[in-house]
Image (cartoon, rainbow over all chains, first blue to last red; front, side, top):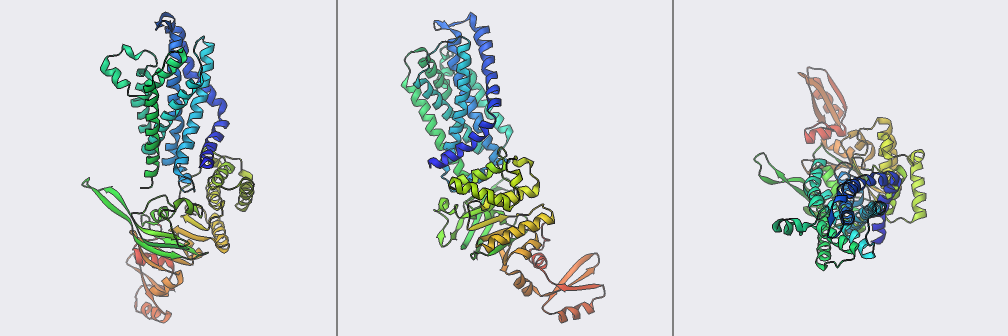
Length: 245
Length: 288
């Protein structure tokens, strides 16, 4: 099974390695804009929970960016399934279907982590202060896993580029703005906050912000992310197996 | 080598009244293929050939029926059986982001081939299909014929004992088609069992030892091309009947000649062929 996971991962690594420079440069654009607009521009006049806004913002941007990158890294599997049909190469190979899911998710996690590393470097250059601990990294990995799995599930179920765009518009975009990325969810009405606290990105933001500032973190947030990771794996695997029906 | 028993595939389908009904794509299909045989599955578009192949290659789960490879059931042993089979699909399904060599490499890795053997076999096969020079090119850059040859090379990489070819020469020029036929014959001579679907009658006549004709999900005839022609009548009388061509078949040239003599329009007497069998049984021209 490990060999098969490596094979699936290897394919994505070959493609990523070839495009590494383009990948890194393109991944720098969005965080740079966020840091300039919200960190330098708007952020200089805002104080959040007694600290600077950029210190508050960076964990949120990390959560948001790792979500977007890991989700969008895996959605090309949709084209492999519908348009190029190259997914069939894996389906007729003597490998366990779970190896395919895990290999693809790990490749998306790698992309998510590379883009997170870019943000971390930029954040320090912009003068942000936060603690980078192994737990911080683990939460980031967990966030990438959750959204890669959601991306995988979407790639198995969705039949057109247009529908895939709708997932971005109706799910990822609202989460990007509402899940504690740019402002504290405490400012929201209770009912909205309760709903937002059901979403995984909120808990990634809470955890990264807590770990980054050295504050205590909530075990419930870790459990929510673990719950989504398990659910995503089950749903993604079932969707893959369902292609044969 | 391959035994198929009462294979059925039904798909949910929304009818004109928008009600969900089950449409039978493959209906009680049974046949056997011997080791080293080239077996053809002929039929018009929509006859169920590709669905049958997709079930035999584990891409689709059958609704009912059983498949055995070397006496072992496919159901429940899919992962193990996939090592035995090679598949040349109807559509070009390479990984568009990889080069020719990387596509081969991925296939070898997915079939657990050891590194040195994998690299050697990739070299040999690319040489065999005359694609060595494009090993580092992206697959998008290849011509249609090159892509077809690469599909075959990829399917053969892990040395499968059963080769499924779904319309392997569709949309290729005659020269390339004949080269691919040569490749398939060489495979069969090496002991590979070949199941080929095609709607090119010439292809089936040239390559296949036996053919099954499928129509509307069912096998309606199965034998050697020669035997199928013989059963229908070895000789065909063909004549013009008010704008349309008419055909009748006779067991002997004498009977065909007597019949032709009675006709007023000009006639042609010739040996019947697999295309005649196909049209007689399906009511459609091959390829339609």
